[in-house]
Length: 386
Image (cartoon, rainbow, N blue to C red):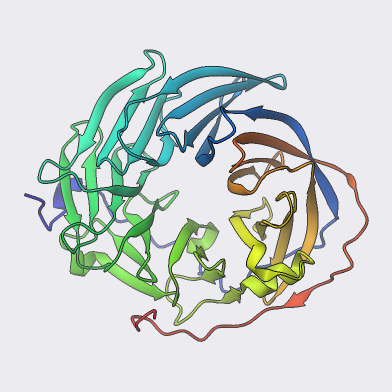
């Protein structure tokens, strides 16, 4: 039986960090273009990429991508040359997420709607462990790994009327417990805090972002904050100073602090389309939100119109958004991305099955769109999202 207690986790609460980030700051930006340095097609034309992670090794970059054909491919990139390292197959349903082990260069985790999290050893190129809920094969719609590589947390689609958040000890492979009262619809995102193993953020189709302290012994005590986006949550990401960003399934962007009564910033789909200089807002989409080395946040956003080649960086400052960078040579609708704030290298992947590695190039002409004001929301916690 899944228990409602997590005292077996044995995670100590971390001390308080800096004050919550209430506003997104921005320094003067120089407009430039991103250019492709190398690109890799992962398979047939109908195979698209659903998730991607990148790990920096001493001699190369290592990529793991989840594909629409229920497989995961791993590549090394060295001296602008991709080489295939492994093809990981065995899931019976779609792969929801892929993660590298934070502690081992040769371990990859994949989670699937088939109810299993598989642990792969790249040296053997096979599955060496499997995590699942023995009480029922709940469809795992998302998962994440704690920064210390001790625990995995997964979210499920609705199962017998409940949406579950499940916890495993990686070494023992034991299911430690679960929550099932805080969300009322499919989980779409689980994100461990990057520095505090006892803090997780979860997002759901029910419109809520829930923040848990999993060092507590029961779900009621663990739930510290419930943020109502008033939409269906797609992606949730932690940033410095415990700020949180959210992208909804209606392509709305929100920035939150952990205790605010509403988002500090709301960027509508129409705002994004105008910043992209596109008339049809229905074609605009937001890929991810990243943080620069100076703590500024920016969006990667694009338009699905035409051949999907439109992809740009939108830098945000309080209630303004500015187009600062375009991606020259993009040829797909992008669904996932990674960013290195030190090297400014961006990696994207998407619906045409390409992994693209980008580096900033020469300054381009300034965008004439200029800063644009966006709406300031006044949402309340725990109200119905619809």
